[in-house]
Length: 542
Image 1 (tube, helix red, strand yellow):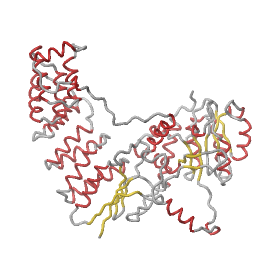
Image 2 (cartoon, one colour):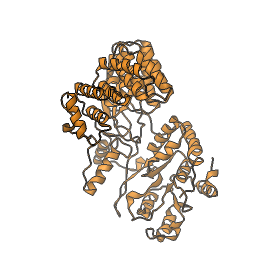
Image 3 (cartoon, helix red, strand yellow):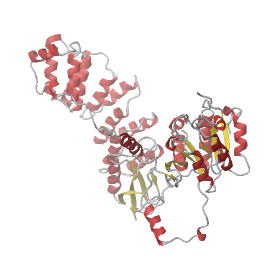
Image 4 (cartoon, one colour):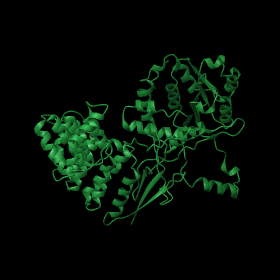
């Protein structure tokens, strides 16, 4: 193990971890100087409880019924899509503040945007009344764009500018081009390109992007490839740039061109837009030979390898494509996976959330190299910690508490006597007061073995970002979801409650005759560290 970055602290921590009793659980607590509150505790590491011999127990009918009801759907945890939104709503509710609707947009006052074309005198009057006369024309065109105004109003503005200045500057033409693309005035877009190509020796990235979007919807779509090449000379094109051409190529049955651009996006680590991926599945419903089917299957594995979750529109396109494959009887259903990991539609048991031995060793090495060794560990809330430790210890768990040295002395928010009681239940390791804590947490977890779980409200996003490649970040997220517990409910003197750890991996997966594809529900906000709850189950009948 690479432990040198931990300095003189590492040997002692290793001795603790190598003690005769292998640690089932390691957890860290670093109190702040704030008011004691349970929900501000950052990290706790724990393992599965030792289960008693099932033969020694008798399960009543009522208990069996409770178990059956508990297994009717996947658990809602900190990693479930919409969890962050729920927490935000809860906090806002507690503060007595209504959560603002995310769909709210700034509306342009209709009184500021003409509803019909104006003559030169009318535009001149508006400009005279404007507080910003120097940028009146550009500002007005931006308002017309925001208001999705009639294109004839914009044309009348250009006539006014031409009459007043004798010409129309590049910036204003670019705003007008954006309006034409927005409203798909394709003939106007083609004419604008001819005019701007003649007047200006060089076009900028914004112009080329707009022309790609416009030309891709016309019979001159191949010229959009030329615009894409022009952008490549300056910057990496956007997924939207590629996607517009891919969609058009498929529409014109140019499959190889579309596929070449898709592979180019993949090589540049650009994530295709939903519309781009939908186009491949939608095109395949009208034409699908073995070669094209292989391409579509490649896309499905691309979604899996990059942990991409389709939106509902893409999911429906995938669903339709499978059911349209000639000679193969596929049937799809939308569902929610049971907590046991079993699909209620086809009874397939999904892939386990636990890492294989090879995956775990790879992840542990990368964590040591990229996070532990690559982190400066010396940088510049106390809950009822004793209750949590005693609760877990009384359930036959081996604990390692990681803390800071000032906990031994006691502070205004930390009872010194608690530490003596905690040391009766757990092994303890204390870092310097200025030490960064998370590297020690990860070091102890990884060193303790793949069986070790941890409890934390810290989602480790910064540390995940330190990992050097996409595959390792995926493994870290999978390991985290399979090992991280979160204390969801705590009332002093009452039973503690932890959020349930998922037993299955939320990722696109397949067997010989099934596909299971997690997808994002409409209207459910999902953060990058959350996973969907809904699945598309596809089953092939022989």
